[in-house]
Image (cartoon, rainbow, N blue to C red; front, side):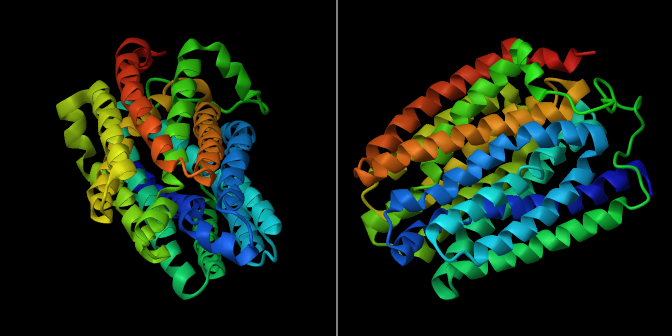
Length: 404
């Protein structure tokens, strides 16, 4: 089996796990009204199933990243997938909202070892010049998972009950864990030898190291800071779009989930166009345009007088987000090549800590009926953020390509 074939095969295996991780992450977005009604709690209380997932997802990054650098990134992905299957069973059987929140925290902690380490594995095995294009293929799996979580999750919730969505996720994770384990049995975790990729092919560390030492690097601090802000602004709004549509336009749970699923479709459009867009606009242009288009989409969602306007707005938001985020994502794989697993895990940690803060703040706004104003503030901030990231990519991050 050639190196290229091996990379493609293992990326497909990890892609199933990444699909499940993103579906699990977004599965509760369209369930909030259902969960609030079933357990007799407010929407803000029910939103804890989203925020605790993000918090535990972020916290566990400091463990998974160094572990992946030490024993092999895809081996950790296989273990994490099995843990996701077990925690999904806990969620599906939760008798109370508090038990459900605990199960979601466990699930977030398990899912933390999937997508970031898969990204880092791509960084180990794909040269920088081809990396953003390869990561776009992984993006196809994660965005498909997002669509499944938001739309199929909403449909299953309305037709079969919310618990069935998590039984389905159990099957996905178990299949991913089995396939990865089979693929890696008797084989190396990596594909290329230690000297085959330049720059920055990492070597395995003699033991687990503290990933927080990477914060001494100014480039790392900058990437993590803007990523945390991006997570708060985008995902803090995204989590409440179905509730906003249901409350203001009387859409059913499945209809609101289907509208939000267009966000994922927009991401798929980007994944198919990434190579052309990168050649046309460059990394700086992608980031700047992405922030601007995100702002336009959120303002449209905030003040639209008819729900039909939410259709193009969600589609645009999905494409725009990945224009901005993929630029940061690609640079994150190169900001500390010798400790790539730890670096990419810190990147993911920053994103989801930002998400958890955004969800908490937006939940308070939702309970006060300030959703439109909260979305509007996020929209304006994203326009500014896109411009800042665009300038930063050009002046402070792009030199990572020349790192020894």
